[in-house]
Length: 322
Image 1 (cartoon, rainbow, N blue to C red):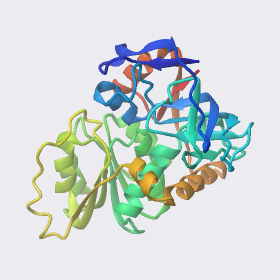
Image 2 (image 1 turned 90 degrees about the vertical axis):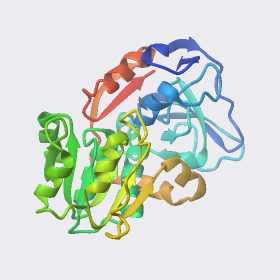
Image 3 (image 1 turned 120 degrees about the horizontal axis):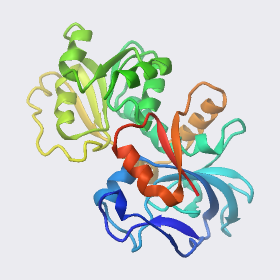
Image 4 (image 1 turned 120 degrees about the vertical axis):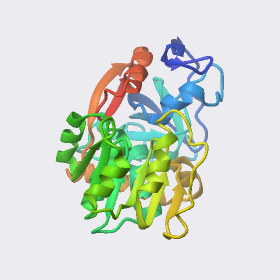
């Protein structure tokens, strides 16, 4: 099969489009022919400096397609089913094998392209807001990187739950487009200090829940903007650098909470996220939630797709198509 691979981490130019062996299908695995690959933020970070499980390495958390083979002990899927899958790596390829618990049937009414964008961002957003952030109706939520995959999912989920929704983005145009997805208050972080602006918009109180996928220096601001009993959930390092030191001196006195979140660990240790993600797919089929796709690149042009994401021009998900 063909795959976008690299032999060392680095800039998008490390990608090579090459022939590699087909995946091996284990007893509880399914094999799919990949039709749509959603590039996740973690994919770009892993390409930049993550571990290489093999050389050449096939990066990628998430993709969707059609089942072409079922392992001898697999019982949930049949050849011909449309499914979306997640895994530690391996999505940037023409075929992928995953264990059954890491795949979902795509409901009628949801395109394969749309489904490819659902599990990681919607599952992450849901857990950050509700499982770890404990958001309830009437509270305020601040979503960083609102125009990204987790951001677009979180805005919709927070609004549906009855929260007042804030988000940051790099341009007024992106913030205007987020309004139709449920955004109440947009903050252009290129022109405004988001801590000061969020406090102004809340009459000095601050926000109840922050979902921070940016990290770096933004993470300190996410703690500083919390209201009394506020909760900050750190879910990524889109800022390309971890926060090396945080000042938490005021958190104890304000009964505030800081949590880290990684959906992969949650799926490994608890079955709960599987049903959660299935519910998101059903909600998209019913028109209750939306997937936003910016554009698609051929798999052979993975370098250009990753570079486009890192340019911060995208609004919504960027796909690869084998």
